[in-house]
Length: 438
Image 1 (spheres, one colour):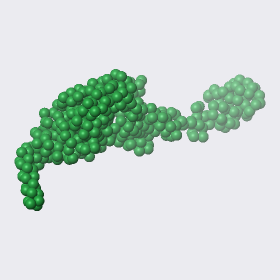
Image 2 (cartoon, one colour; image 1 turned 30 degrees about the vertical axis):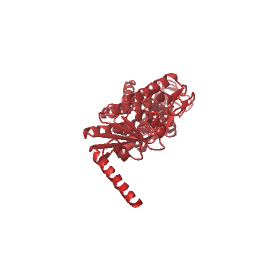
Image 3 (cartoon, one colour; image 1 turned 180 degrees about the vertical axis):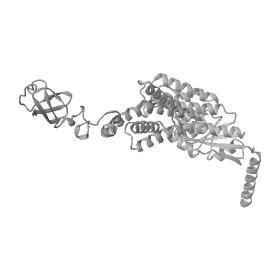
Image 4 (cartoon, rainbow, N blue to C red; image 1 turned 180 degrees about the horizontal axis):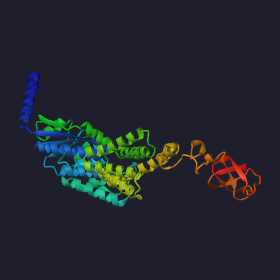
């Protein structure tokens, strides 16, 4: 009897599973990972994923969220992408949706969480990881989180409590109150109780079935190698290093030519800088062209006298190209300033070490026009040697004599020779003609 009941129960279970499967809708489901740090590269990747889903007329988008947070501005743009999409979107939190990650998740139509995952802890921190204390910035981010929660009719006060430690938030569903000095972070079960998650699921497939789709036509969007490279190259620290190498390499090659390696390194670094921002969708070809024009103008300034005009125009083009290529103007200026200061130090050291090879040596006359090298500032009258003539004036010891038919200033070796005395040239030293009485 027990065996019969067991078999019957198993049959009923299978029958219900098949019935549920029959009710699932067909349709293309796009699965897009939201992983690692939120930055400009992730924004470009999600933009591409959503566009592909819309072009293919996908029925559902599942965002696999596991991020510690990141840039607020990137999170805002990603939130706009999700909110502006006509395709139903589910944020499936597989690990953490912390800080800016919680803001992204709150823009989805539905939120599913894996057991053990968390959402919240969205306090603002600066680049060094220290908490931001500016009331203005906190108020702004708190209002953004509150608005994101309100999109799907979630309690906005809880979102504010994820940002601002100075407020008190009642959470009767959990039987506790968020006190001052605390930041709200919700586990999967807690999020379901307060309405910040709609279900707990163990896999992406379960989330797809929960949304009513079979998942037979599932497309997983993966990053291309170029997007992975762009994500690395658009990191603010990497951008600063690339700009430093680019500036130092190109300037050293211009000032101390002949090495080749600094010039190649500089050009490659600048190329990687613009390539990363171009792949990420922040820079166009015009930014690279603007930068190349700047380099050409600076190079011309070294050879063409322009009273600094070419140098000023070249510098302006370089700076404009770097800033226009970057995602954030403030980050670009900061990176450029740090890179320029560091490059100046390195350039000064290299120029000092290799000062004998500097380009300025081309404009400095270093040859000595000495007699032993065949140079003389006066004509040497060697043809007078041995000729005779007559002194016109008394030679005491200098005076004037007629040698042949030419009046010449002459000197004796120290003796006195009276006027109208016959003399003979015994020595010629440059312009000094030495005579003796014949």
